[in-house]
Length: 130
Image (cartoon, rainbow, N blue to C red; front, side, top):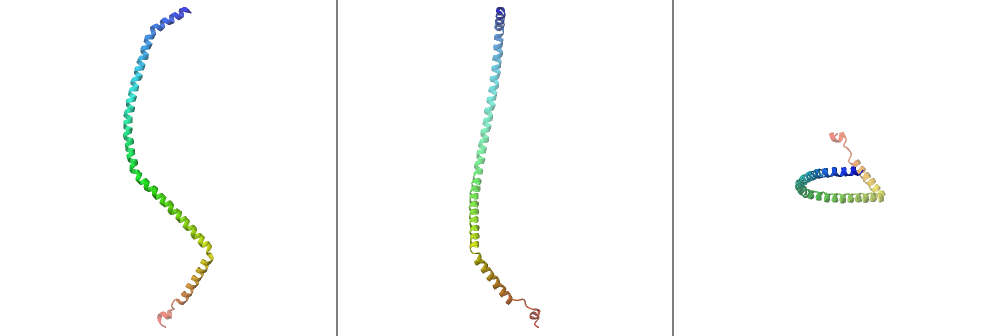
């Protein structure tokens, strides 16, 4: 067993510098790729900054119409509420005064029917004069 350990140590002494060189080359390649990625991230961020500025300017242009739409919505809501309140008040008035309204409509219809009797259609003898 001691001879195996001694042989393994000798083998490791031979391959250690080679493994160290391979690891060093891998680390260098990794650093080069990392530098390339970081430079591409930097250029991407610069492009993104321009896009964000463009979006900010577009949002500023759209803000005024959005404010107008919000004000219009509030006005429409107020008009709707007033209409609902008015219709409710008219309904309540009609329900409370249904008898009086019915009497006035009947009187109006009777009055119209009396005036139409007086203004009846002329007969053909009235028109010809006979």
